[in-house]
Image (cartoon, rainbow, N blue to C red; front, side, top):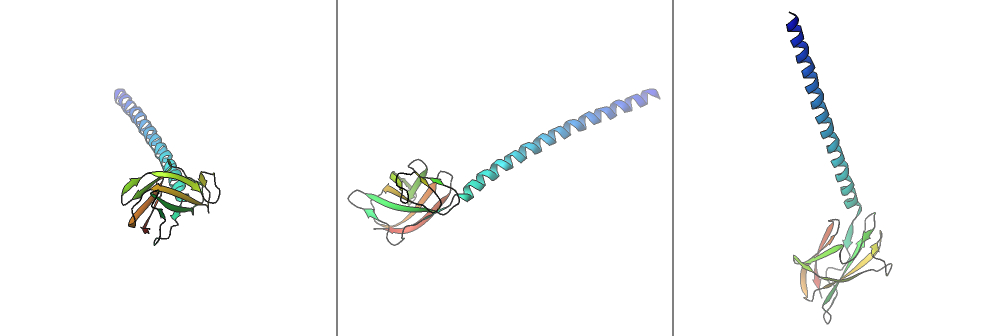
Length: 151
């Protein structure tokens, strides 16, 4: 009978050790998931706070036919600053990436940051008039699209 009680105690202790191990694994997994959710929520919050509109008149998007440059205007309508440079934004016209010649802040010349309410100018190398689909994409992934007539 003593051997039966001893084997039951050994089984009980083994079950407790296994349960503690499983609880530790679950606790670690839950912690890692919560960290991932926190990181994703910060990224989403940043994306949501960065917003802009393409401020061009869709019926008359300016183009300098001698230089081959089309000018786009974007306005920061979000809550956080938007870096504006050749490397922080991408312009697609009819699905093709077009090179950006230069960018500037209309409200604060010389600044490469658009603060809320500021208007930015993006000059791209594109010299084809007519109706086109234009998409501006920020480094954060936020993008806006306009279908307009390049004069």
